[in-house]
Image (cartoon, rainbow, N blue to C red; front, top):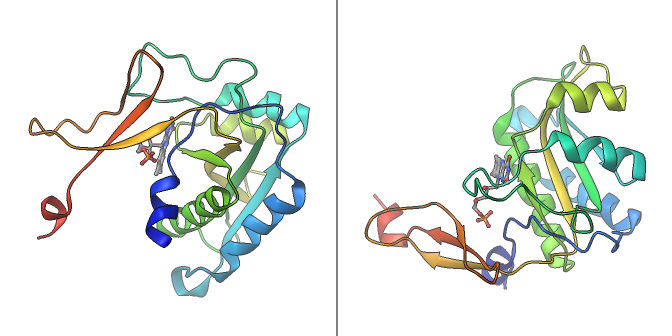
Length: 189
Ligand SMILES: Cc1cc2nc3c(=O)[nH]c(=O)nc-3n(C[C@H](O)[C@H](O)[C@H](O)COP(=O)(O)O)c2cc1C
């Protein structure tokens, strides 16, 4: 069951934009991070759920999608994420905690997948623009990553890495997205 959930939890970059994610559900996904480990039990991260039209219009242009697909400019109108969860370091509690951020990000992505939603962890973000647009104090918080979320409108398939070792994801003519994953023997030392 857990492995099925992991396999289903792919990076999704095209969504049914009109399918809103209920606020209570988003809050519950963030609630799940309270049960995860953190550096020295610091629980130093903060989360902002963004679903309003205004917030979505601000955040979307600040994101860079699928660097490995240079011919694709990102989701088209109507395929944009319907919600975002922004993860911040609370600088009064700690800073630069990428492992904590990763644990929380994956916890939220798995929560979304379990509920039939999907999304993408984004690191290529114009952080200054997002922070300024949302009026968030940069002396108190630092934006770590953005989670873009919605109802998936694309098919993503996992495939084994071929002998040439190429790990770049790609799409076929029907827009199916393929993600090469290394085999167990390759990652075991
Ligand atoms: C820390 C982190 C940052 C990422 N940043 C971006 C990003 O800025 N833009 C993007 O389209 N995908 C981003 N991704 C998604 C990866 O490209 C994706 O995980 C990878 O292609 C493998 O696909 P999978 O998640 O379906 O296994 C990021 C993933 C992680 C974990």
